[in-house]
Length: 171
Image 1 (cartoon, one colour):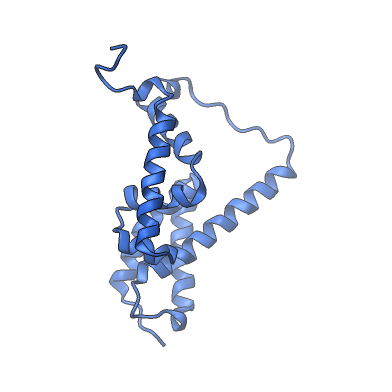
Image 2 (cartoon, rainbow, N blue to C red; image 1 turned 45 degrees about the vertical axis):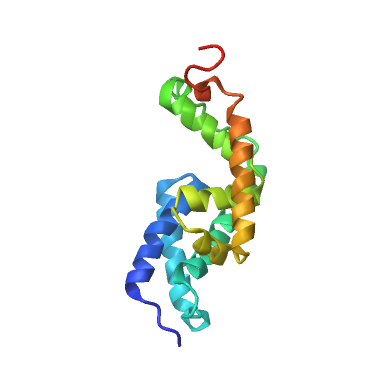
């Protein structure tokens, strides 16, 4: 049975929580998902290859868990037509919250592979090598996806006045 270093498991849960919040949008559910992924990783430790980074293996378990939860939510929502999402608070439309919402919408508008690599690099601060391992793709693919993701994000944000450059053509 492959040993899983306890310090790496604890660190993976902390890092994984950040990813889970982005996927699930809820702190409590993200914390639960990160813990459940750790439990599943521990239960499947005989399949862990210690010659590979632990986080990439844990990340794939967590990602599958979160994507399954999102699919369950979508199924439940389809069968509850009376459920209406809550209206955003009025102050969410101004200032910093407006910028955050515009950024979140722009990120959500990216193709899934681009969104994932952008989130791993900028929200989890993984290196290209760590991202390549977590996604099971070559580093060159990570770099090209990240380049395209940043370009698409810049283009999407250019449409929002909150992100207009200071001293631009109208300022």
